Image (cartoon, rainbow, N blue to C red; front, side, top):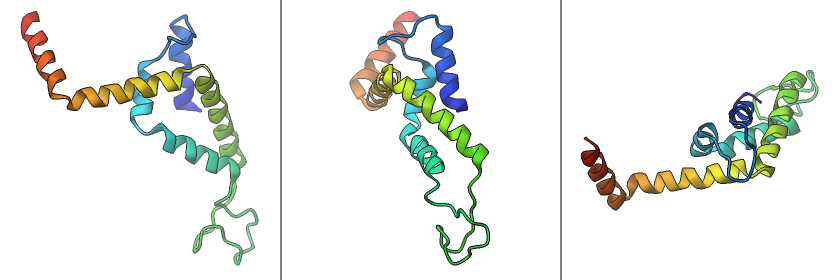
Length: 124
C-alpha cells in the first residue's frame, strides 16, 4: 500500500481532493506502467499462482516451484488495492494517466522541443 498511500498523502496534504487534483507521484506512477503493479497486487490477493498446502507436491500452481500463501502480504496487497480504488474513483489516476501520456508525447514531438528551447533562450 506504500506507493498508493504516498499518492493519497500528497493529495490530501495539498488540501484539496477533487476532480482537478493530481499529483506528481501519481503521474510518475502512471508513467511507470502502474497497471502491471495493480495486476501483481490482484494476483497476490487471489493467490491463484501459489500452493495452498505445504505438503502437496503434486498440485503445484507454478510447475517446479513451491510458493505458499502469506496472509500478511495478502493483507498489505488488499490495502493497496483499496487505496488504489479510492484514487481511481476520485479521478486522480485517470488524470495522472492523461498527463503522463501527454508528457510522453511532448517529449518526442519536435515542435514542442523547438518551442521549449526558444522559451529557454528567451528566459536567459
